[in-house]
Length: 405
Image (cartoon, rainbow, N blue to C red):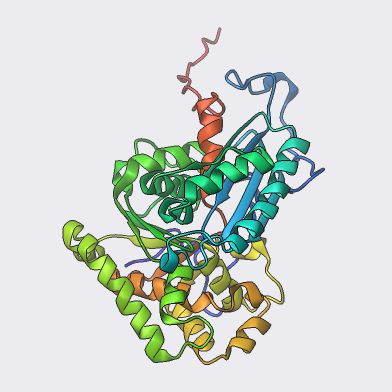
């Protein structure tokens, strides 16, 4: 039977699924975040038996991760903690950098100006938080734009930020690292997907390849990359799909056309790897990391405003996702704007995202979808901290019996 093997994490019938309350302290419960946040209190231990962290440097520096996508500019600033990292500052703004680039081949001046304003905010935060090490990446919009390199030169000149355009493979691996702690450890297969503005990363994980017991720690984020069985990057995202088929006025016919377009891109990947035939005899679930799935979860839960603690880590049945898509298809553009978890910034993109999810579920019939409000930035932070020697897996100590006299 498909679905999360740990039923305590699955939403019980008639009940709303509970979000994962770990917030931003990698896998620790109820972690505060934001400027001035205090660390979570640790359980008391006997003074004579304090654990020794041999590999943690005495000086704990601050790290930064910036993800400049086709639709969003996101920043996360964090410091290493006992089980992962503790966020001290964050920023997110919809900038629509890739607006029109699929037609013109270039980033527009209006989009560039919006993005430069957002990146200046990021630069100020990195400076204010005294970030010692960072990685600043740009994805699909800058990859395909003829003036992408020129734009990054302007960014460096105006803000001092040196962004790098990462490959599709790097983007896929970072997405997996960023949300790996939400993978059901008893699953055989997991489909991780990241729906962006200009592209969508699709990654199948074969969890039999993991080399140790899943510990729900920073190590899971890195070891999950070794479980990648196949991946692809589709040249479709919410912005490109909405620009091609329409975003404001979307009927069922237009929705089906979007779904068929995405399936056409998926078919070659499935024909090569044949995951569909493996699903009947495997424990499988999907894990979605994008604004689309978090928005769908917020609408499904009926939240009066978006609440990350309720959404991140929540489980949805695929029938719940389809129900939200049906409801939104029956709404006008203005009614979608009025939805508190959608708003004006996403109202013309949300149905394009729903069409991508629908295409994935038709190609691979899983029952459960887990929602991740985390992704590339968390993957960047985990990678940087691991490279600096934080959180190495401690050696197992042999049990030694004491001689009694």
